[in-house]
Image 1: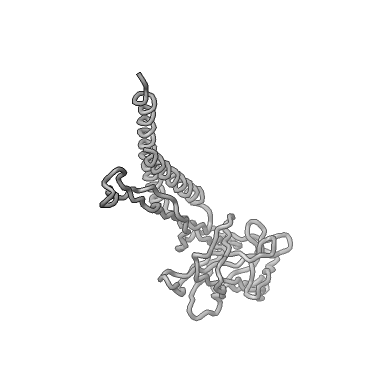
Image 2: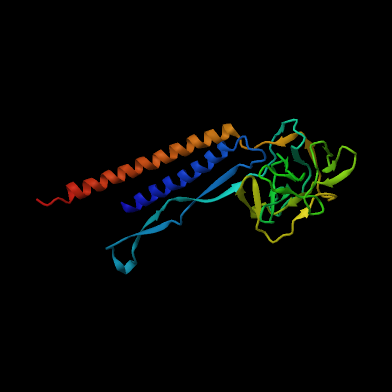
Length: 271
């Protein structure tokens, strides 16, 4: 009886965490460059049930296997390209990836902008909603520096610049003031979301630039941003299915609770 309680409870916890993930996806549906999370559910190892009190000369009689519930194994971001949204803002730059190398699993690598956070650490993002700080540097909305191909922040001074498709930045005097660095991340499984659209890379493989890379094609589009790749219709459908699964496990839990209550109060009553 108690095993059934644990199984239903584990199912409720797994569906609650999945619902939280889907809700977060829906909350970021208008966040530029946001990559939707996907969840994978996995069952706990099954238990082998044997009958007690049987003839020991032939060993215990096996009844069968008992499922012990499910759990949310991991959350994996979906790094597919989002749609382009026109903003006409000169500091907005959308990254459109074309041909990219494939991983050992057959998945496409991901291209990303290179950012330096306030602690001087390198992070990556697909959010091209850039800004210009008080010192004339190109930054993220939070004030983190966008790095160029030389690994240094890019000084644009004002909004009177244009961005070429290869990332070169031309000022109002037709001078090249820098080139936005775009990197290739092959092992996307080692990317960790840190919030504010930033990704941390925990892998051992070196991150290489896509600029001048013969195996990679991309282009930058000024005045556009890459939208979120959250599919609202699919997310709503999954949220409703998750809720129904949670409620089904809840009803099982209530049924077990009522059975235990009757066992304690009625069946176990003396006299």
